[in-house]
Image 1 (tube, rainbow, N blue to C red):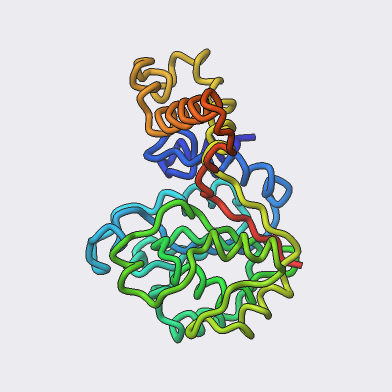
Image 2 (cartoon, one colour; image 1 turned 120 degrees about the vertical axis):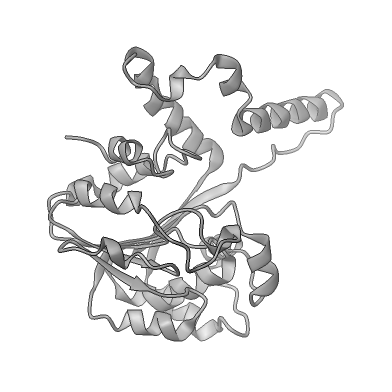
Length: 284
């Protein structure tokens, strides 16, 4: 059967291993979700295409594609796909895809979605990536995730600065999740109160955080297959020097050099932690 990563690469979503930023999230999702492939599941994705207000564009932009929606549908042919976005994707609605337009910084709009009457098996937050939006959405929508379901937050390594400066102040989402892992609860703030966080915390079975290097390693293993597929026009058609000059490669080279320099002068210390990119929250 076609893997989820093959579908991500086919439709050009950055969740795969070769398109755009090639985050390689689908390598993980394939392992998590393959058992549900032919079931009548409900999946909700928040943020349906790149180029929204997080990049300075208008919420009323004209949208032309929703690649991950097509990916999810082909992987879950018997499932119902739901989408939330601040821009209007209603043109893509059909018998298997339903769209709800909402601003994930608006608590009332999220409350309205939480009353939609649907319980979800999987929720994927690929929205604005702003810390406040991610955490408010988690608080408001975790309740409509089924017991045993998965709540996923993507791209934790990047927050749009104009949002972070203008929205209510909150610790970044990676820090919140690391605090939960260490202490069993979250950091409260005025607009994200402790009692609401405690309700979320009580329903979490486990949290998995994956960083840049872990995902990069999985990408390399998966993409090795392209070396022996000359008909594939993607990753391994790039000249070697371009692959070696990729941002991830240069960062790892710099960190290794810095670690060697510290060790050679007797100043030992831990290598700087790779950026956390993906959170998988498993509900009890």
